[in-house]
Image 1: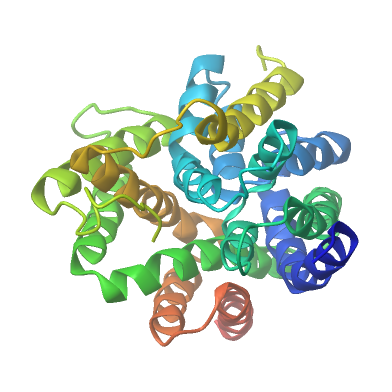
Image 2 (image 1 turned 180 degrees about the horizontal axis):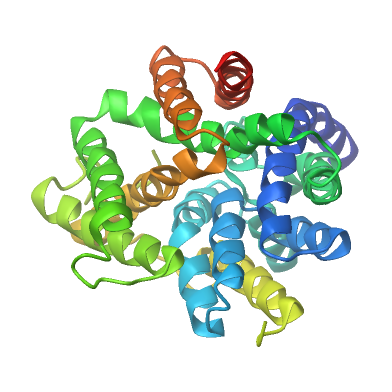
Length: 242
Length: 101
C-alpha cells in the first residue's frame, strides 16, 4: 500500500473514532471550564495532548492550583499505558521506517488509534496512523473547545447528562478486561473502594490529599500490590499489550 | 490562581508526548521484569477506576443519577458494548432519571 492510499485509509478508519472523540471531548470541556480553561486554551491543550484521563487529571490539579511537579506525575501515571502501546508499536515498524516517522507515530498514540494501528496488516505504514490522527485530533480538540463554550449556554440538565460521557468511556475501557481477567476485576474494585473510602472518610483520619494526588498514590499502590499478588500471565514472555 | 494555565498545559503536553515516544527511542529492548510488566498492565485500569468513582456521583446534579449511570454503564460494557454506545447510554440514563426525579 503506498503512502497516499494508507493515509486515506487512515482518514476513513479514523472517522468513527473522530465522532466518538467529539462527544467525549465535549464532556471533558465542561470539566476544563470548571477548572478555569478558556476555549483557546482547551483547544490547544486537547490538540497536542489527546489523552482523556490525563487531561482530566491535570485539569483537576489546576483547579487545586497544584504544583507543576504534580502535573508531571499525573501525566506520567495516567498515561503510562501509552508507554506499553508505543512499545508494542515499535515492534510493528518496518526496519526502514525513519526515526522521525517513528517519533511522530508515537505522538499519535491514543487508545483507539493504537487499536487500529496495531491491527494494520504487516508492517505498519506510518501514514495510516497519520491519517487517523489527522481526522480525529481536530474533532477531539474542537469537542473540548465546544464543551468549554457550551458549558455555560446549555441547560443545567443537559450539562449534567453530558458530564457522564467521559466516565462512560472510562467504564467501557475498564470493564471488558475485568470480565476476562479476575485479577483486573479485583484491582478495579479496589480502585473504586479505596477512592470512595478516601473521599468519604479521609478527612476523619486527617488524610487530606487532593483529588489528583490520591489518584496517583492509589494507582501506584494498588497496581504494585496487584503485580505482586497476581503477576500478569503474559509477563516475562515479552509482549505487554492487552 | 498562582500558577500559569499555559505552563500547566505545556508541561502536560510535553510529559504526555514524552511517554509516548520514549519506547521508540530509549527502550530498544523488551522490558523483561515480570513485576514491571504486571505493574504496567494494571496501571491503566486502576487509574481509570480511581478517577471514575466516586467522581461520577459529583458530576451529575443528583448523585443518584450518577450512581445509576455507573451501574448501567458497567452492565452495558459487561454485555460487550463499545466505548461510544456505553457513553451515550450513560448520558441518556442521567437525562431521563433527572427528568423523572
